[in-house]
Length: 479
Ligand code: SIN
Image (cartoon, rainbow, N blue to C red; front, side):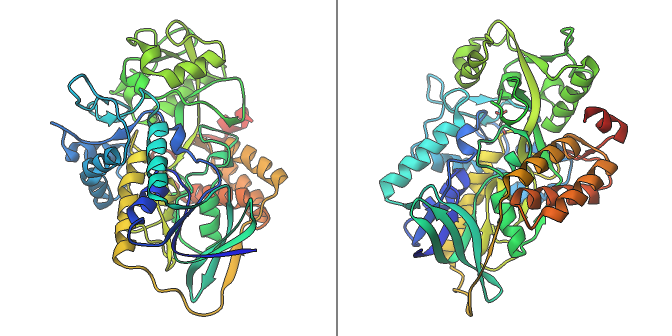
């Protein structure tokens, strides 16, 4: 057993975790623990930020609308007002964003935005560049890291959180710390098919639930409307960024009809929950397992979207000439561990940031490209809070709560969520899923997280944003 100490231990090394760690690097003894790279590296579209003639209030307005009014106005105001500063800080840390010949940042348009507002890198490789820059900066500054270590326990003492426990290349490891920051990303592989990389499966949520921290908004699981339909029914599906639709790509049904214009005034650039539901409907109407994205009129499409082009090449689809098969897949958890304006959870000593957290910015449905932004802004806020004041080490004996894994139970949980807690849900399906999952929640962390999702979905009796109730007949047909 390896026993370590730190002022602050950050679990996760995506944009949120690294923003916390780099913000604390000169003031606190900080240790970053991770198990893989997380979702940041896979983000394509970019970072939403009101620059130039744009107005943060317009960005806030679009964020509120996309979230169907359930976001916290103050949390959203902080997000959009602090965005320009945090994007400038990201550039200062070495991120190379796309610019025009005069050096002005290029901005693309995505769903739910009233104008081009999304800065990006490498065309559609924004997450990879953000990840590279933050990790290179961490290497330069000599940040303490513990890589390849899976955290499966939280140490509790005196009514608060006192550290973590996990397993890595060195065997069992514990870290005692004044503050633990969970930045573990979303719930991706709690579902069968997701755009998230392998390894993202709600670990932070499971730890928080075990420790007794409050979680909110768990029913708001966002499905990206255009994952690449590779033919695989499960696992990680490549993303087909919605910046393509911002550049003119159009969703089409089997007979070639564009179907978004009749669904929403913003047509293909409607908020993501609306587009995902429309794609599902088109698939049902056509009896197909995907719809089609027509990118043929997008100028220089292969050069501007190299990540998507490569994924299409892999399945023998020519992005510039062919219609691209797309289908919805789990993408983002809008809710999560309840936090205040500084990332503090309901448990002393425990903080959460990024996708794992519910800071109140997304409401019922996240606005496109607000996720990397949330990591930057709220990561900076957690760092500021812990710079100002470090929680006292909790007194008394330490007990450790741990999460369990059972691969067979996890697989069944994935299928149940895909069937009963997808884009459309029915009361009967949710009840059936909750009954099975809650009986197994103590045996497997996927069941634990899945049970929290269906419990929240059962409690939400109206359709709103990512939570859509449908007739049970429809779901039965889909099984
Ligand atoms: C995308 O590029 O379509 C995804 C960006 C996001 O998740 O906001």
